[in-house]
Image (cartoon, rainbow, N blue to C red):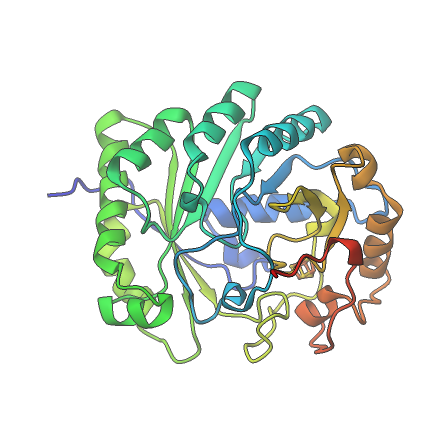
Length: 332
Ligand code: SF4
């Protein structure tokens, strides 16, 4: 019998995180709010505290709302040497918080425990992942926390086995629920203090999953987060756009693609927002490069036509022009 969590679970709807009221007591909501407040909307902002590295762009699931299902970019895992170089350079530039995933499944990277250990030893203060949880054995999950992972969010987008299979494309519901309970129990039994959350993306026709998950897992986790399915940075145009009109990401978060490119967004499956190739430019120079400044200028001047961001937050539906066309890598 899994051990229950001693603190009450926070329930948060983060569909429109730009509204302060939605964050409430949510740990993830408040982290996002803090980032938004601290962002400098200028052409050359200081190098950010938070980064996200695409350790792999492979996912074992194919959620119906997710643009991963359409990705044409070559699927791969980041070589260990490249990860170490990027994490080190970013740390030297001032980064202290690191997400070890971007838009795919971090547990599909066999080096994840090694990466968490490496970043802990470098001095990163906060390491986090979002996972569908299905590739995690109990021993792998335990190793991640033993290595120093500070935060895990399970992305569970169906409240029953049937709905989960329909949305995720895989019959992994029972395994994922068991993994969440295991992580909760591991944390309680070892008196550890990492964050444990569950998020659920709700499709327009799904009014039940979030409540069902809350009943099933609410007592085991710190918070349950609901997101309304949205257009995935414009890549799923049949879904509604997000409710916010401004985006802080190009100003205060650095993203790194599996190929080693600096990007403006973690949700860009084709590298339309890849800015510079970090094999030929220093990270500090890339962060302040002409190309990145030009993208920030477009955000500041509300002139996002033709850029992927226009499809994301301005309802335009054109084929976006890449920021750096040399970095578009379609699988052969
Ligand atoms: S596509 Fe652009 S506007 Fe949308 S989340 Fe990414 S960086 Fe922000």
